[in-house]
Amino acid sequence: MAMQVNGNYEHSRTDYAERVKEKQAAERAKEAKEAEKATEEKKSGRLSEPQDEYISSEKSGKKPTGLYRVGQDENGNRKIFFDDPKADHADGKDDRSGEGEDGKGPKVSGDNQGKPAEKCVTNTDKVDREIKKLKEKKQQLEQQIQSASGDEKKIRELEKKLAQIENELSQKDNDTYRRQNASVSE
Image 1 (tube, rainbow, N blue to C red):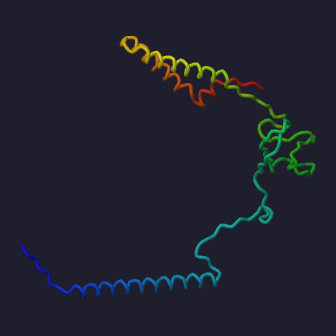
Image 2 (cartoon, rainbow, N blue to C red; image 1 turned 45 degrees about the vertical axis):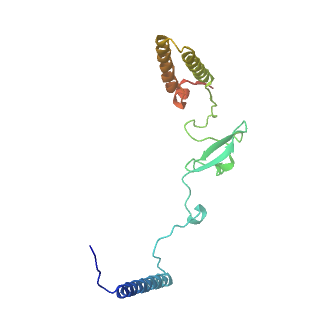
């Protein structure tokens, strides 16, 4: 089966190339018009897109709703303080010095209403020991399963115990369980 194609290839190539050049020229003209339009908008004072701008609280004239700062507590530890601008300052003093009304320690705003901050210590040692024991028991059971290579009944029994230990570990070896079962002292 023979196939013959009639037509001039050179003619179709040049025709396509001319169309591509015309499209590119039209696109360049369109881009030039858009650029010219943008420069006219800038000259007339209008912006095509709104722009964000930082205005400091001093320049805006508005007081901030609240101010957080990092300071040190009585033990020298880093602590975050909140200076409430709505707090009454009858004496005219700025409360940003980090000291309370008595001048002794930092003033801490919040629910404690001027009382000194309480210090609580959370201890998770008991929970950590419990988890460590479970991991050791799991390791022992795995070793016993490997050593009991002939007794199928004993292997199934050990695997059942191992599954229980792994289930218990998955429930206890996480931060939520540690927080719930930690001892808190003041």
